[in-house]
Length: 494
Image (cartoon, rainbow, N blue to C red; front, side, top):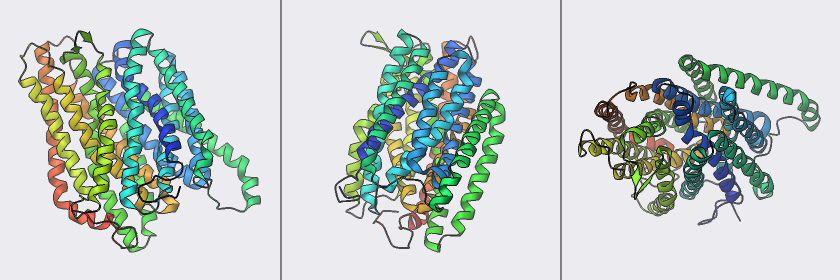
């Protein structure tokens, strides 16, 4: 099958699709359970729990910058993916022991940093410059991610409730091993994509193999130790994240100066779009912290006589992604044949509007319920439907743009920059989640008021971001809708 053939997906697409699906099952098993594990099992207060969760998520995405750099310069996509998968599986096993909390989370951070960004980069390398097909492919790939997430949200809560958190984390390790098995067994479908960079002579590469391996292992061990330290001291993590982000952005700016003017302008516009991505993700990130705790404490979780766990309601987001991703994929492909296809910045702005509406919906649900009663679960359904539509307007579209605009020599690193936006956002999300921290012993009424006030602030931030982005959309879109040579890649509404 030819990469980029009209209406078809490139060779290797389904290998990456199913491998990523299983890896995301393992990762989201941890994500859906971590806040409840910290509060219910370890007895951490809300503010500390949300900050630790935000710090963990931030380092996960910050690690993708390093993971992309390592793949570009040393390992190639394939080896980085395998190494990352092994480390993640080890991390999940360590989490089965209470004493292994920070070490396990650190191993998952380093492993995911190597795995996730390079899976996305490898998918991008399979495509030609057909933007419509690329966006469609990434949207369906995103559906695979959320199939794994949906399954995790249901099975993880069942296993944790019935057998204990440690068995749920062990299930995550099994899923990671399955992901590696799929990837390794299907590597022939990837042809020559994702191999190590050929920057040295064969003799030089052979001599340097052992020294490179030693340096790489030492570097990963040092990174894991540093991450564990900052997870244990989450209040200091903001400084490290700011410094590392500044270094990454500085390096990226230096590299983009070397590019020709059309691609340089496109990458500068891309950086501008990253700012709004940070804004989006720091509000979106409340779903696994403040919204999860709100669900547990203020929502009626009794549905048709069965009381669901709070984490089970998180399955609504990936379920809606699975249902709606094919619809959006067809929508983007169809609109690309007309003059009514919104540019990426416009899609981002619509995503921010939908995100604001989602949080206003939660407040509306509270306003229509009695002050001493639990909120009906239907409002959570509407919330996650709006959040999902917002997410599909931002996440797969953003990954598609990065994979198309990035210079081939910087594909992994540039994809890491996309996830860097999420890294910064997740730490900020952990900080602003403190707005919804409920003091111990608070009444039902006070608890509801705290959550509704914080949700109003989150909605306002998202709406202001959309108002700022709409006027800039034409300027940003004019640059990022080129293929790097100054030629239009598609017709869009900017």
